[in-house]
Image 1 (spheres, rainbow, N blue to C red):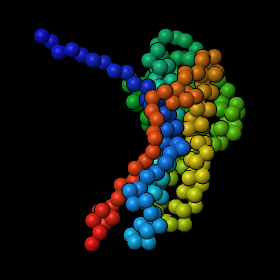
Image 2: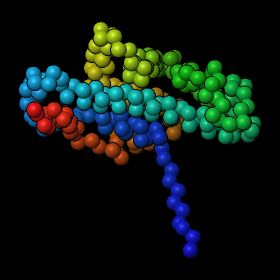
Image 3: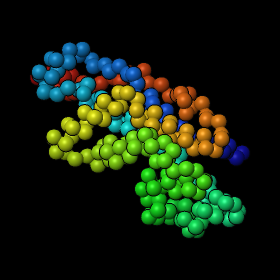
Length: 224
């Protein structure tokens, strides 16, 4: 008897966007002591603040990943059919050349940076560049890619810089700006292709977070 084989397909863009949107809340944070002032006075830290930072990091990074995974897949689909002599495939080969594996393009100067990758995809598709068509959202994307996401992935420990950037990131995350930006950029390509936007682009159909349980430290659990 042969073992049954199951094949699964995943939409990374869908998963990443839903995670970002779910983490953007609104969420309630729960700490078992209930009295945060006592925790801060006794142990010198605010566990809720640390938990919020962790969740905001998820919002920012996963919003970025939703955009990047979508753009990568669109380029991959054109690369798969690059020998079909279509207008898109000819543009792809002219701009990026004919690499034997798609992974080779990771180091290509034209698409190494996500912002330039988006512009190249627009050129291949024959769409207006996003900085011309949706300048406000494009500027917000530059801030997401170059400021917020870069700051969290490559943190600078200098206190003043950290406090200044985190204050802005926390405010923008509380407004749902980052998942909304991902929706705008991904939707830009659906609209230009005259394709109906999928339901998950406007609302979560997979993930919902009800709250965050903040765990006590060992010192809180077992005080001396």
